[in-house]
Length: 223
Picture 1 (cartoon, rainbow, N blue to C red):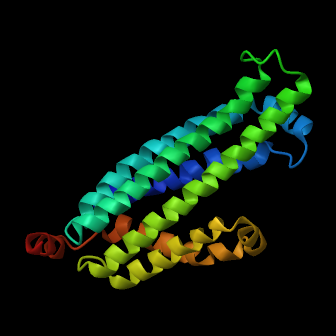
Picture 2: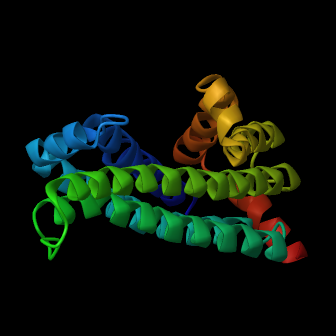
């Protein structure tokens, strides 16, 4: 179960990194709606692929949040449920970001927008991409809260080393800087340094080592 959770965790991260972060940054020309609209129309296949991967990321997210809940339920049913609820909200926001990402294609290709001038459609396309990025940042805040709680549950567990949990907590906490966008912009990308260590360690531990089944069972029985 731990390895399956790690696999879906990895798939979600990879799909989000390319489907959302890379694609949106690739087609967006900051502050230039006309150039952004032209870029979107020139990369329609890439945009649709990014949208598809964004939806795959949401599906993977839902799967691993359920698995993480099951894994850490023996540590604390309440905290594990809170973490799952936060992760579910994050997945919903992630889905909204994906919809905003697809909106420029519909706007620029017509989609009942004939009442708007070409300039207005270009502006709406740029606005949609900006909203997608903002929604994804909000998703990352909730993801950071989830990761911080998971790290704390790992520290309290007996079946995964506490140091993995401490690193995960540090990795999750760094995303809370996004609550202050000017500070996040000023510190980018250095504020992500704890997560460069925390998440890979957690991911590799889940995929390679998993968890100690006897200690997990003992903690489950004690609960």
